[in-house]
Image (cartoon, rainbow over all chains, first blue to last red; front, side, top):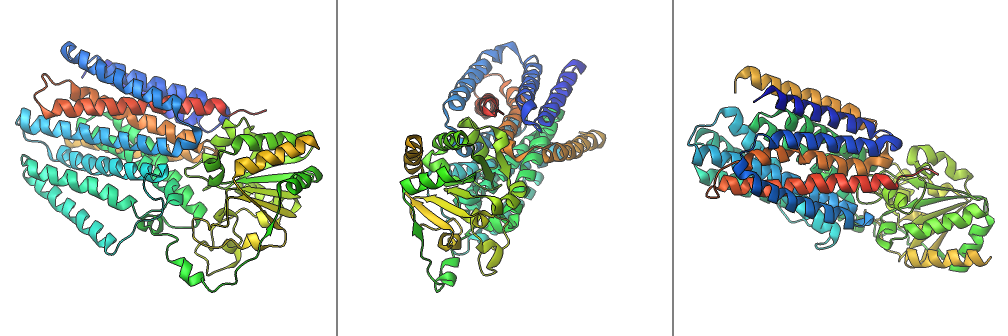
Length: 461
Length: 95
């Protein structure tokens, strides 16, 4: 391979690194993303010059088709649907690496009839495993997020034993593949097990644990690209793949830490299913309701407000009307901020994107550790569609499944209003004792509708 | 692949992973969603492998077909990933 092509790949790698570095500031992030895209363009051009002219037509056809689908989806997708989009794109990345690995395998064994080196065979097997698992796992994550299949954990007896047996079966088939590379039956077994494991490992994991799952699958899609780099002996694939792999792992860690759970605990799944009975005898809580007009009057009379958004805000698409509420408050010189819990929503940073979409300045969005001390001095907290992340049981009830999870200290504010559709439980399946607190008022109804009414009341005041 | 060549690839893998950890740890939580969709686009780098796999003559081989499937998917990932990331980052404004 000529030195010029290798140098082009090096430039692409440097641009990926620079692009990621510029993501550390909101101001430079957009430029960083463009640099990264430029790197990708250079890598693609450097590869295209190695292609025979005859194949060029169908290659361009595939690129045009892929670009059209990508552009259409990227421009059409709603911001509330970003977790779904990232999930399905992780799957595409995994499937692409998986297909490249298999393509290379069949090319070497069936077309060229050559024997494959040990390192390459192992890389092909790894790529098929991670790529296949990423594909079906992401597909299940997508279907769960999109509501096509239930977001609650799907568990059955012997689940983990089956996964273990399948994994051991994969290892066995892998060893035989290394010994006899030409047997297509073995490869088919590897493919089937990899695809099955993707499904089986994600179905027991519940909807609110999806931030962890998506981050992990993101990491896997990078690792699959990395393994493909070892097959093709290509440096840029290894560099880019390991950057993505590292990125996903860090996000996974952040998410687990924010829930005070280990990765293993999340991956074993079934969270929130068994706790109901254990809690059954607890005293039932009585809540106080508040109406739209009283809410508007409360807002009118305070001097500081913190909004705690959660997944329910995304479901109700309430981010825009909350911006209007903010404008009403700012007119009255009320200090208005948002408190963002790291696992609010269905993917890392989900709330931030939704509020940015509603044209809310990002310096209003304060992270948990920076805002927790401010709650005791805050007049009014409005909780929109968040539940477990404000449940004081995490602080003071060692029996609670969420005990130990860092939470937003919303309960310490003078008054708390909870905008909620009904008295349903949070993801962890536990009652939120905050709702029974003397300073807590429930504003029942669809968040978008009720807050719209609050805003129009305030406009008339 | 000679063992020297393999060692170099492993060096690249290990050092790039460390670099990745250092870089990502500094990304603020506000940008975690664009970071994910952006890294999604970067994992589309497998498009390079897909292009090489498509470079097979004739449609008789399964290799060619797999390569073309991979190419379409990787292109979706690259184009869609960068576009949606740009769309998101455009919205992050400070007033």
